[in-house]
Length: 328
Image 1 (cartoon, rainbow, N blue to C red):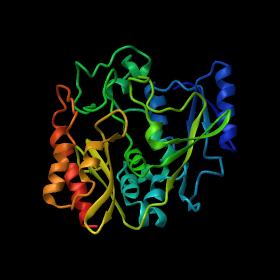
Image 2 (image 1 turned 90 degrees about the vertical axis):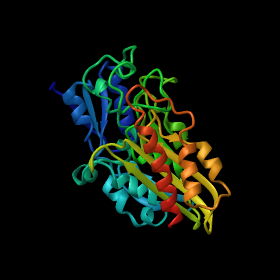
Image 3 (image 1 turned 60 degrees about the horizontal axis):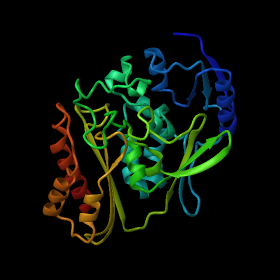
Image 4 (image 1 turned 30 degrees about the vertical axis):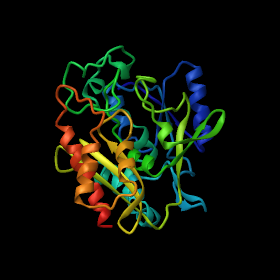
């Protein structure tokens, strides 16, 4: 492994400025907080960083609190902290459950919210040195290759799936992302933060060069809101979602007033299933409604040669999530 230069940032603004300075000198840059994925990428050669900007030396971005308009969560909060925080547990169950579903306890103890949301894809072609779209090439090898874990929604020209469990829950809660760059701070909705490959096949989000995600703000949820995150994996634990679903419902008794349903593991971005959301509005939740919602969730699916097994998983995950919410 090549020698790396380490920069200990004391603020997010300083981190962004350091990244800009390094790139102006022709150096490749990576931000590191938990570093659980970055270290593996450097070892594998899928990240060619010359300079590592250490965010663990920053004092901000480590808290969770109510700011009057909702809950503010720092980007450096660990997934363990996120899954166990009383504010998150009391009103944002889907987010706590999503964070708790990631990896192993050891990974959750160091992995951060921002790192989980902005991690790179785990496609085996990209991770094993193929010159694919994600590596700056002009081909997605999964189209005619091994694509059992690839996208069935929103794919093309790249068919990766977004690896984050936390991201779908943030989209379902209408989170707003705080971003810092050399030119200052900006905000972007969680839904607009993620970009499809058709927009830019090398990118998964709208961060520009030298910007970093520093925190999220989730608007206050009503007392009638219930939520859940349901995850299906190809083994019992400690892996990415074959299919995940974050469901957030405002209800009156057992009647749905409003719903957000966002899938994980099936698309290059957290995938909203608006047809399911529209179907659920005004419905009394029960087994028949949940089953039909699961079937509706398959609209627009375009499986590749080896990933049609995800179709019944999607239906089952949506149905299970909705029934979980009916039970409170």
